[in-house]
Image (cartoon, rainbow, N blue to C red; front, side, top):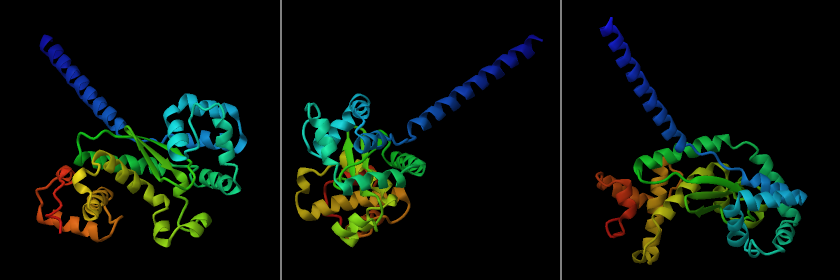
Length: 265
């Protein structure tokens, strides 16, 4: 009887250990799941209704995002300026921007597909760069300027830059090649690319145009590998691809850290 009891205790402890490991693994996976914070919604509410409580929430709940948007993206003043709320509203009072805000909210009412795609892509990237921290991602509305804003472990997606190649404002102001990159499908590759660039910025030795091009080619090549398809296809990516085929022992991290471009030819 005592032997049976002892075996039961051992079995229970083993099960508890299994459960603990399962929970630990689940928690680790949760840490790598990305859910885009919809800062754009509270921003949209303020810019379309003038509801001052929305502006207060922007400042209180999203101080970093609001400062970055006002001071670095839009460059309309300092976030602590007593008149900044009025300036912010006035800036977006233009009918083109008001229409864009509504179009953003319609096209991006649901972003669950992007949550899943970003989570998968950054988990895949972390396999290649194990020490990389998964960024927190939020959505915002800019004014047709920057696509992705990189902060400290943060990525801000300007949804106004991904409304589709045939979006009327784009057709008037951007080239066909530029417009091909301004689609919903480019959000995940752009997030990967800008984040990798922030982790592996260009060094002093990369000042020549050729070296700068090859540095971007390396990043675009990595994005292609993570995405599993040729999102970026150009001469510099082809050169990097040929280099990696010749040097199969080179890891992604080694490729990105290497500043000797003489072998990439």
